[in-house]
Image (cartoon, rainbow, N blue to C red; front, side, top):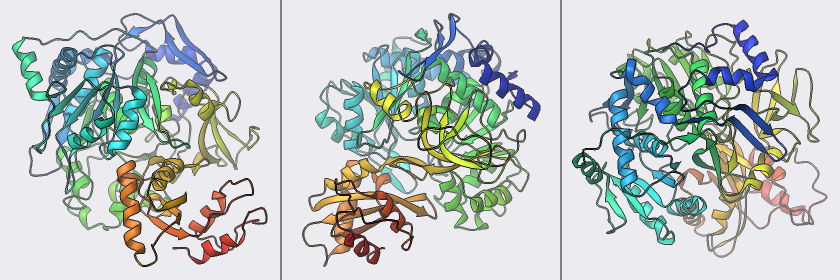
Amino acid sequence: MSYSYQIKTQAEYDAAWKKSTENPGQFWAEIAAQFYWRKKWDIALDWNFAEPHVRWFLGGKLNITENCLDRHLADKANQPAIIWEPNNPEEAHRVLTYKQLHDKVCQFAHVLRNNGVKKGDRVCIYMGMIPELAVAVLACARVGAIHSVIFGGFSAQSIADRLIDAQAEFIITCDGAYRGAKDIPLKGVIDDALIGCRFVKKVIVFTRTRTPVSMIKGRDVWWEDEIRKVETQGLHEFEAEEMNSEDPLFILYTSGSTGKPKGVVHACAGYMIYTNYTFVNVFQYKPGDVHFCTADVGWITGHSYIVYGPLSAGATSLMFEGVPTWPDAGRFWEIVEKYKVNVLYTAPTAIRSLMGFGTGPIEGRDLSSLRVLGTVGEPINEEAWQWYFKHIGKEKCPIVDTWWQTETGGILISNLAGVTPAKAAFATLPLPGVDPVLVDENGKIIEGNNVSGNLCIRQPWPSIIRTTWGDHERCRVNYFATYPNLYFTGDGALRDENGMYRITGRVDDVLNVSGHRIGTAEVENALNMHAGVVESAVVGYPHDIKGQGIYAYIVYTGEHETEENLTRQDILQTVTRVIGAIAKPDKIQFVSGLPKTRSGKIMRRILRKIAEGELENIGDTSTLLDPAVVEEIKNGKL
């Protein structure tokens, strides 16, 4: 497969960007024409950001799995589609060719149909990082059901919230999952989540860890038993459901600045075209390359750059069940050597964590197959960038520092590996189709270079968020209402003298912890559920490994002075139960009160400065209800 739209020179990039921003409909229509459509579209693009509405390829009909699987069977049937490396290096790895993956997806699509799943139904997927997770995602898309993958680290309460919001009547899970030295009892967590979700009709359970589980008659079925039924029925091919270009493909829940997670909705056609285009261009993918994205499919990175982007491009995607530091800190490098990985795409958190082990785990490993390195999830700091470039890429591999979000579906700002210039700690230039602007607090566009402001995008790209599930007004308010006729990213950025962008972090009440966005309100809600917590405020602070850590200030009633650490453990346990371990604060400071304005608003700006160690430059406290509380908090800083 050749990619006629793969950019090879700076001049080609300049021309593509210019064309895509001057006439986006025509630009993307030419790329879309190279995919398989049941029916071609009538209108390439219809949009306005006021409502907002964005519709791409209107009137077009397709199924994304025919583009990810069927169209590759003629020339790539025996090429690996997914290589799976298990958590335990002693266990055998698995390879699924395009033919085998196609067969498994068709087979499981029949299982879904047999269990009552139809077009438009929501299916929650809560599994470990195994090939069957990709099979489940693709089978949902094949039958036209809307999948909602939930990361395996979320608690029962978090799952229940998402199930209720999506009204997901079907669940696909495993008995358990392996993650490093841990066994995670996935089915047990699902059972707890379903206590308040009586509307769930079926739970399909794949056997992975042989953990004893409770199976409820009439509701719970084993994946393997259902596959045997399909085999007995002699069912093989499954004709893909015809979807409209704007039909929802999936819902993915992300943290917002309110306590309730919001379901980001992506549409079939635009999402497919944009993830494919960015995959091929940013990583400069070459046929035969092994692409190793280390993310979990529970996050958008896994959706876009383990499953849909690589498979729609006919690539070989490596999927890893475990963690980078188990059984030792050489695991990534062992995998790179074992499978001759060409493209490695990971998070700055993982890089910083591995830096802490020094270069010992890299010694003796053959990393010469690596051609491109990538980072995702948060801005990478210069020290980690240099370490990655020198020790992993041996100063030969370009690093693509990709900036994007759950809501954007694919990469928006990044250098193209070896084609456009890289700059340490900079995401650099926008991709074709992406027209970024910086604005001040009043929404006035800041022209020129060597400037900073709030990052917005001026026009839609194909994989832009379509809505928030069941609440379009929330989508409008969150992304399109802050600055009229602009998509507001919630991030600040600076633009250097060459027009390159560096993301400087969130400007709203959302934290970026290890590349995962967590709303402060969500964490505060969880903290406040603890019986002894009267009130809490959460802010981010610089963290050596995670990039941003969570610092919680808590007004507590009752005895914590004698057993302060025990109380902290109890509070952390509450957060784990309500959200999941990923949202646990790194520091908890007990305070007698919080700095508030006379109207009762908590001044998080002050708390953030204290958490960051800026004790001298707090700013004006005269408008506070009780300025003395600030001194007490400063004196008690952890």
